[in-house]
Image (cartoon, rainbow, N blue to C red):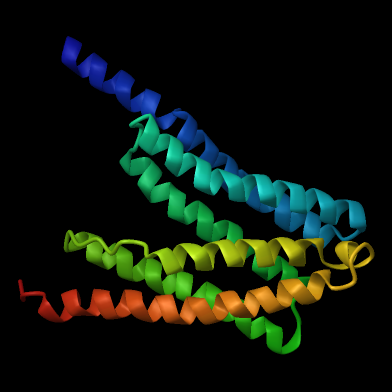
Length: 203
């Protein structure tokens, strides 16, 4: 093995174990912990789920910041970061629905959010093949923030209602607000993406 190859291998291994990527791995590992605690039931389990969810949500902002600041951006991180985000949100919403914290018509807010995430992910993957990137808008970032806060209130749910009676209600209201913004920002993404699809030249 040449010296150049050795350096390349070391750099690749170091990038895999970089702090930003380790934070992303941690967010993925948090998914079964959060969902398991929600489905386990009990106030203590809810508070533990909330704590783990908050830490995981914070790593969503921290890993990208550190990767840019320390110049440790990688294709692995770019692939895993959105996957970790969507796993955390979708799995938690499904667990909350299974626990009946999200119930009745409110389930549709969760369905809207999950469907949008899947559709936008598919669109981004397709556009990536065309070497087209669709930047995240400021409104989409606000939607993500509202969505995470709403889910946090819903995770507290019954345990939080004992301390503050409107905990679940605030969570459900925030979930609908996030769903509305999800539809709007999703439309923006598809409008921008479909223009590239229509303009694509046949191979």
